[in-house]
Length: 253
Image 1 (cartoon, helix red, strand yellow):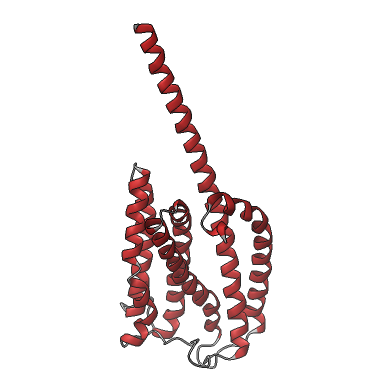
Image 2: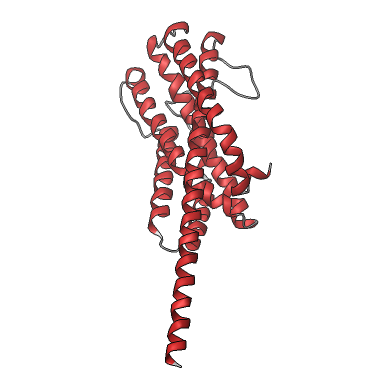
């Protein structure tokens, strides 16, 4: 499991996993679309609009899961000084932002025919919107600080502070009266969703997970390679600079 915290080991493992994950994600996504649009039935109340669920729910789960993993890596990076945690957060934050944006847009498209409006300041919707804003702030913070060490630590601390929003998103439908329906899939009870709808939902969820992992691997590799080039450039620059200073000293003598 060293590849989860070691950039070199991760880079080696990523070379083996990337192509199979990409192929698997494409296959699962194609099968998921087939089930979602052709093999799953319409809902007796919502009709064909229920098919938005097959995009909305997986994107919502992945938005939360991505941030939870970023929180874990922030703890590892700060507490145990594992640099890979900073690399992971920088590479993965845009992926989480995209999943959150897909969740918001698909939710609005689903909410219009069901609620009669594109948006309400509902507890669940508002907390998800805050999650998206947090992702955007993280992305901008990664682009703002010139000092890499300061940037990484500040971003990691901000991620930990922002993690307070995760249980709010998860349990908002239980803590407050909201328009958003409660969870239809729970660990503590039998799912209240028909198996004919559960199948495409599970397939699409795994497709989204595979796509997210494949993109994350690609982005982490890019950041690792970019960081290696920057480190090499700085090393060469310092060597040349100190060589220049040494030559000047020799000439002055």
